[in-house]
Image (tube, rainbow, N blue to C red; front, side, top):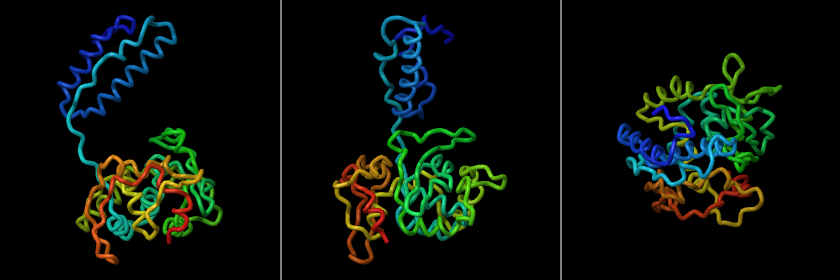
Length: 275
């Protein structure tokens, strides 16, 4: 398009998004919403800097409908336990941090031994490629309780003089989890007829899986250390990705990954009491 910022108007932005939509039919509505947000941020900055005057030209534009979002996947407790039996260290413990503590891929990479005190993991940083950033949201910067299965794995791989990154490569730098998944996890699971759905699939089913590990269904009486900031039950509340039928061997009942779990349901005392 080649227009200068001061010459870029609402009609230009509208036409731009519509053109992108025509040329990229696979883009979803949320993708276009993020594009609009990016453009809006650019012009908000231009307003503050005095490059343009008046109102933000991006605000009135519509967001293309886009294609339907694909169904997201969440590992069940059985799948999580099977994966942990199959993959080697350090991929095993890294996957367990996602599955039992709900950390994102970048947050797992950013963990240092100083962040682990035996009972909690403090989320202090996130690493994307070679860039060290703060966690995704302010609410994500908190201490996350470590349940016994995860604590056993962390303690088992902790060196005597533990310093630096918990998950590190041969050169001592934070481990590239993308390469770990590509070189280790994906081929290992494929040998056993399993599919790797990504690191995020481990944390999507967290609320349901923690409940199935043995604790009573949590209620909404979370204390100040509530882990609602981890977004554990987001997929349950939105009904995405984890709606599946699971049979409980003890009660012989069918368990559903229900979207009725209340926001803020997974709290510190509930996690620490498990197992």
